[in-house]
Length: 604
Image (tube, rainbow, N blue to C red; front, side, top):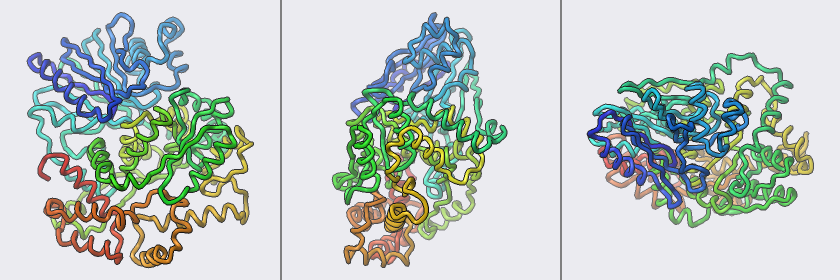
């Protein structure tokens, strides 16, 4: 995926070798024909670097400079809140800057304010700064660690940084060893915790982290933490709502660039709030909605109505039969680009976001609105049936402790968003640029002081009704805005959503399976399947993807791995395909990890 590759080694004997390695790494992670590269080197500092970027990135080919060249910068990603950043430079310096050249702005901010400026940078980014004044190198990531970035110490001295783990496998003499604890977390939480990778020697950047390299020394620090905001007094409910609405309305337009931006639109409130603010300001982005193969979902129907009433162009991107026909290809590709953190039930993200490029190279979304505004958490124990594991691995599984802070938004920002959501985000950003105003620094600084509010959707409702009252009569895909009491529209949405969600639930219990099977045999399921949910892995892994799952999991290579009880896997698959039990989560976990094992080219 797009990002920075950086090798810093104070050893002239490996300088030319590292130049060739960086070029090979850039080629390795340029997954699509629309990728571009920009190389940079500094012999006096032993630095080789490359920015891999998408072809629509403005000024991506330019190395940022402070003017006299003593400070140089490569920034992968985007910065927002340009007015505030230019204000930090002062009138004399801001007038020299191209506001679209984010590398230049970062270089000039660093010249005036040093590392303090990292706290002000707003957006998803990886950053490299060369300071020739004191012969130092600064490497940092964004405040919330959403842009994948990894680091490792090199065996012959120095450090390396890259956006994909597979780059580190090209380093001579860097022996990578499997982290079994990371494997446990992968099965337990569907993500890797504690900024781990599947290799002990390579770590993911924690949130808000910088590395300073100087004279062979390397010092890392955290430049911001959500806990500092949580320590501030809570805002009163009305004060909070007024503050968040004001901030949201002021920042949304920053995330829309005419001609290249399309709004990924759903039937919910998060994207509707974005559309309402843009519409109120006279901006009319094209809209698109993801849909399924069985029928038009509530998302599709509602989005079509809203687009027509509001005068926006709109289209639907369907997860069609061709996706299932080529499922193995998409699963293999998604797991490869994500270094194993993608799952069989998330690989459709790559497919869909590539298709979304037809609407816009930048995808504006309401992602993370539920987590940031409403405090919804999805990071939890998702352990499979432990009977599938071998005795030794089961023992290690029981002995591995997951240290997660479950209760406040700091856990969301430190752990859930960068790590659990990382699999989807990686696939999206591999295909196009993704923006969400819900992750804006200015908005999060306010939401971290949120009081307890009964109606967690109140904020988006107020924004929507204030800015686009002419669209108030259309309920959401959850029945919101349909009126109070026993409103028939609200009851309709809630009932069909519940039935369809249960029918498609990947963890559907054994007792419910006969009900679903009879629904299929009698045709009753056609009434509701696809109305709410448009992804159907439980159904697919007993139907269209049955052969794929059987061949992958019952292959002797899979069954012979020391993690599993081979006979238990065979029994599991027989029960699943006979309809006597539901092992969809286990199929997804085992299949995903097995594909990564085969790609890793190392014995597991």
